[in-house]
Amino acid sequence: MVKLRVRGERVVTIGEGNGPVHALDHALRRALEDHYPELAHVELSNYTVRILDPGSGTGAITRVIIESRGGADSWSTVGVSANLIEASWEALVEGLLYGARVRVPAS
Image (tube, rainbow, N blue to C red; front, top):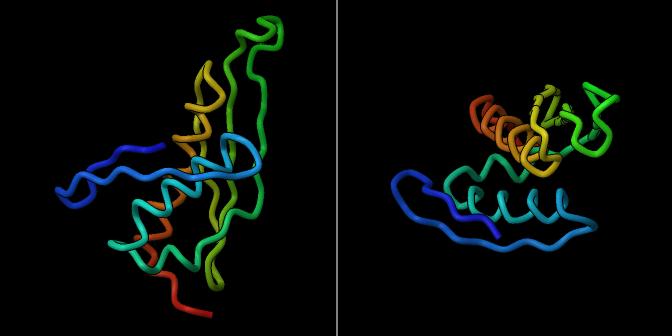
């Protein structure tokens, strides 16, 4: 479930997927696509997780890199946190915000 303010409007959506990051992606898109229809053409093309301090075990800081594409454009965004879901959220949000700014045309 995500709760956002989009252009001053409170939006609450839920998403399901193959794991928590996929579910977050679905919920975030649902919240944004009415206001940013161009996001329908943005797709996640790669998802990478890197452990930044491997000596910390499960408490390690993670860096998530999300590669997205839309039309002829592609871009990468990064999220960093000790919480894998939070790092993924940061990268997802940045990727979709960038996709909305580039105004991806329909293919």
